[in-house]
Length: 138
Image 1 (tube, helix red, strand yellow):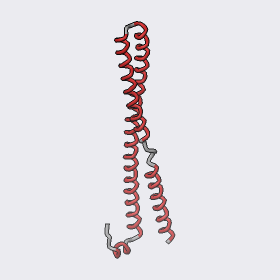
Image 2 (cartoon, helix red, strand yellow; image 1 turned 90 degrees about the horizontal axis):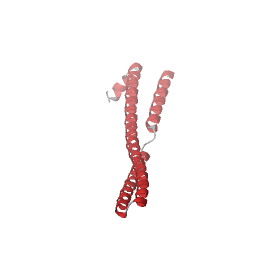
Image 3 (cartoon, one colour; image 1 turned 180 degrees about the vertical axis):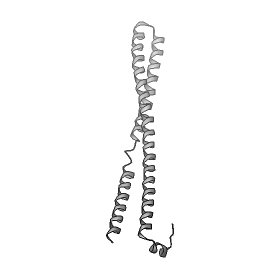
Image 4 (cartoon, one colour; image 1 turned 90 degrees about the vertical axis):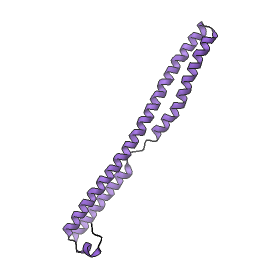
């Protein structure tokens, strides 16, 4: 592109419209690439958060099963086996308690759809339409 004002002033309407079209196309492509990158980031955080949260739920279920087994063992067996089962149960609940907040934080990091990029593209298209309409009136 020339940056010489004389050359710009001498450019025909057709050339200017061609440049406008090319620049608008490039701008829209770049905005779409930005929106795609934002969506990928959101999907990544959602996947990690859902995975960690799901794993925490599995650990809670295992903890409940172990707690039931602990109660059965506590009634039927002597203290050392009961104590061992209780230690396993508490370890599972501790792991779930540590994983759940991390998973929740990942899910909360999911950004809303790239509304800024969408709004920016709409504004660019409106500005291009207005410029075309303004040039057509001259």
